[in-house]
Image (cartoon, rainbow, N blue to C red):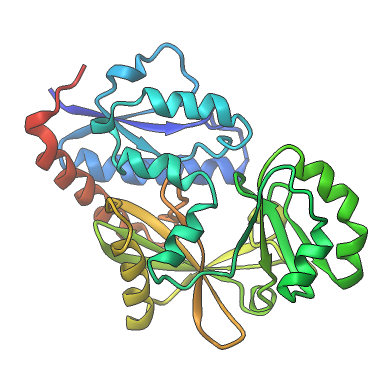
Amino acid sequence: MSTLIYFVTEDRYISPIPRNTYVENIFREDELLGNALASLGYEHKRVSWRDSSIDWGRAGWVLIRTTWDYFDYFEEFSHWLGQLPAKACMNPKALLSWNTDKHYLLDLAQKGIPIVPSTIIPRQHPVPLSERVAELGYSHIIVKPTIAGAARLTYQLKNEQIVAFDRDFTNLNAKEDFILQPFVSSVTSFGELSLMVMGGKCTHAVQKRVKVGDFRVQDDFGGTVHHFSLTPELIEFAEMVIGLIDPKPLYGRVDILRNDADQWIVSEVELIEPELWFRIAPEAVEHLAMAIHNHIQQHHENHSNP
């Protein structure tokens, strides 16, 4: 009997929507990975994390793929994550909750990883945003929730806009923590690189570019994605970042920007549900399939399927 791996997505992506390229890409990438795993003797089933018919507490193997609504249902998602057996999770369970909150960037900085300078503004912080920005000496900023994705409640503000935003920010900050960062100007000229790392090896990269007049690289806002040729410098950087995370991820994505000093800095590390762009580098899917296979083989003795 083949070993079953749950490919976990969300309700919106269970059934394909005709002529929706975005959803078709999700199905295509899951198909590529499913085929690669099938060649190694595994079965997979695409399921929503909100599927109550599954006994998640007895799940065998779980690969979180496209749960891109977790920040909209964070308490519910956290409860679901808590139910998963640690041995079922492809990436160490200890990393999953840690990676949902951008406080993790400060942990990376403590390990010596260069990040976009980041300041946490705790919920209901009494100091006005403009005053905090002045203390830091910034004139152009990004501010966004620490638990978010797809540019949810992400604001780019300059000088006088920051003061004008104080009242709105106080209302937003009353409900959740925010992270404050200086705006990295290269995002509008060059974009952001995403470096995929599987089984400790950096396999491929993409360049995400903004639409003219915007600052967000997500395709929801007109951003585009392009193949980017890896260099030894990029490979070393991505593998260094993943290698310093403990426990070590099985797979993940390192997003980086070029700062004003022409140095690479980390903007995000995605370990929960990273988009991996196999459609741009389909050969890389074999690396994730083999990493999953090796992981299952190493843990099989102490692992029993439901």
